[in-house]
Length: 419
Image 1 (cartoon, rainbow, N blue to C red):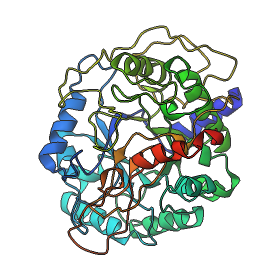
Image 2: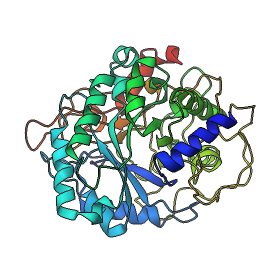
Image 3: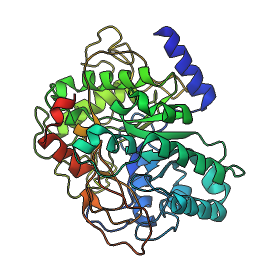
């Protein structure tokens, strides 16, 4: 594994020149399905950067779309808020249930023309799609995951983006695709791995049913999923694009939401494995899916005083068993500085996670009407929370779906057999 780690380190430091950004996911909508505007993102970004006790500065954001909610192709107002707060941006292009991303590209093109370097200097990466491969898989279809897209279409969209921005300041921005961990070991998706600079991983041990998903086992579950995904992607860097533990809501199999358990997860996954080590976008600063009975926000009303202590311990409770732990150590400092080090490595053998059993309810999209719930780790497609139809300001935008609600359906119909 030392060789693999060296390859990963070279890829991260040279191939993508990534820093170990820390941020949160941010959808286009609020929990009541109303649109977010500049003032909403300003509040989010200022809170994120001012979190008391944080093990570093959360000055990055992952967006799911470039399009402002309830518009056709207007640039999302998060861009202006990011410029004012100097927040780094992981762009998102929504690609599920469509054969064209022209409106996404048009919105981004307008934004680049309007803001120039003020915007492009903040863009650290772009994700072409979110959990499309899961939705398009046999597992996703069996769990009524909604309309996704296959590897051939995702690769085409990557080509469309590259062609559109070949002569722009975004030409060298590293491109990735975000999906649930279990799609990456599937050989049918290799074309997507080959086409991207980095791989986005959404993983929620909380939603793993039937394999022991108590909080005490969350570190082992996460490590195993991470390692299996990493072993499949040929040394390319992993960006952890969604993970978290709910602070409140109904119990899920053995997993219990609570502030105490959210703190445990923050320590064992965030501090032990991710923060200042791997580009990480936590789920979440504020709740974004009103239909999800579990709440993931680490703050109340965007207060800079979080629900639990964000500082990192120096020792951890997750056992180290050979290479089953990505970092290979149960001891680490939670305040290490970002140095461009490689993402975790290892091979792990325990079963861990699946897109069908993870659902955080993060939202994305621009106001499209999503009449069918999707599945996966919870990135809501469109602006409709949990698949609730939302009127759009105009026709023609690609239909998008919510992932959060369907994961609940997925487990109800037997997702446990998939782990």
